[in-house]
Length: 251
Image (tube, rainbow, N blue to C red; front, side, top):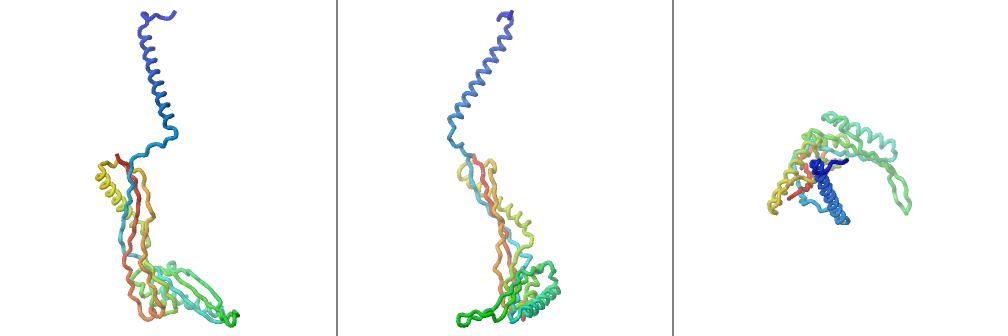
């Protein structure tokens, strides 16, 4: 026999509480299902955000110069021209080493043999050959750039294709430029948020463009100009730059 209401009132109260809880739970579940059904086919509302671009720039003196030296020879026989070029290149390398340029900082960047043609009465005739060779040299002591050009011209280089200045390891400068770019973006965001009467809550997304290092103008010379005296080379300065884009959530 089950106990009557009078015999077990606590059991009946507990049962009523459970039934109420189940009723509330089922009601909430039904409401959630109803709301989800209404949202089908609708795009969820985006968070309120602002997107700001920031820029940071650090100026620094270059610490590396790259010089491109060239040798051009022509003649009737390829072996003779090659031998002449080899002697000149070896003389240049010796001269550069005497100036303190490491062998690892010298690299052959081009070697080309081409025929020379004569065009007479529509006929093409080989009348000789040319041999051209380029040597790329890294000069780490910028005070020696002019001397390098002068010495190379003295011992046989007949082409100087330019001097290009750069920063050998810009990583630390890139970190500083990035920090300035982030500071710039945050300052702009604060000013814009204040003007709109909103508050910035947090960063939603962050992206960074590649840091750039503008190259100063390339200096070009004629071999006869640098063989007589060392030219005065001015390295100037370089800008290491970082550009970022930050999206802030606002409310």
